[in-house]
Amino acid sequence: MKKLIIRGAVLAACMAGPASAADLPIDSPDYVERPPIVGLLNWTGFYLGANLGYGRSPGSADVTACVVTVAVCPTIGAIGTPIGPIVPGTPLFSFADTMSGVIGGVQAGANWQTGNAVFGIETDFQGTSQSSSSSNAVLDVNGLVDPNMGIIRAVYSDKLTSFGTVRGRVGMASDRWLFYATAGWAYFNWTSNLTISGLGTANLSGFQGGGAAGLGIEALITGNWTVRAEYLYLQSTNISNAPFAARPDISINTRFRESVFRVGVNYVFFTGSVGCRPHVC
Image (cartoon, rainbow, N blue to C red; front, side, top):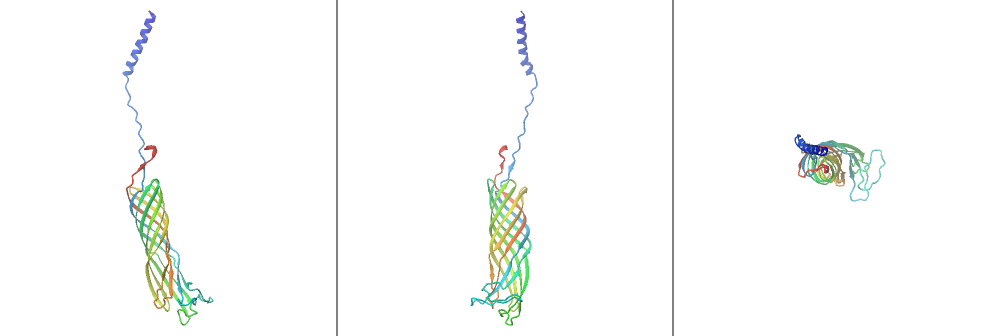
């Protein structure tokens, strides 16, 4: 009899347990918010922008004078310096020709990104306030310019009116940052004046090609706007002129060597797709 009572109590308890559990309130499931996808900038696209900076062009301009029909020409030397024959083409005058000033201009280009590597092309045009002037005086002991073998004076002024480049770019992107190297073709527009006593004044101007290379860093600041800082070194090919018709044996030779430091801003038309970090994709 006791065994039957105990068995009945256990059975009743087992039947009552599930029924009581069914009557308990069910809590809503807890949802964990997934981290947002973090976009990685793709630099593929086109851009337009403007820049402002400083340019410095140290160098010299050399004037040579030589009778073209002889193997050795007489020299015009510095006052008080012994005079002797020189090889044709040796400078007779040398002018310090360091130009510096503010530069400003515009640029346009395009980028293509694959992985973290960015390849691009860019062209820019710069206006500049760079100019210089200098003078020199020598004793014409051989009467090459002055038949009276007196002192001849020369004044030279030079101005870089504008320059520009067409360059390739190779860089490494790190999300909103782009570090790059650049190199390509450069061109220069210039004017100069040379006055030599006894010969008069020659006004010169021209267009000269050359090369350019540099380094830069660019960063996206907001929306489609980027800012950059850049250094470029530009060098022209040799510029040679014989400015005096009566004396074609007298020529002036110079070359531009330009260091450019500038900052700029670009508006970018992005066309590349935005990626995401692997742990949240």
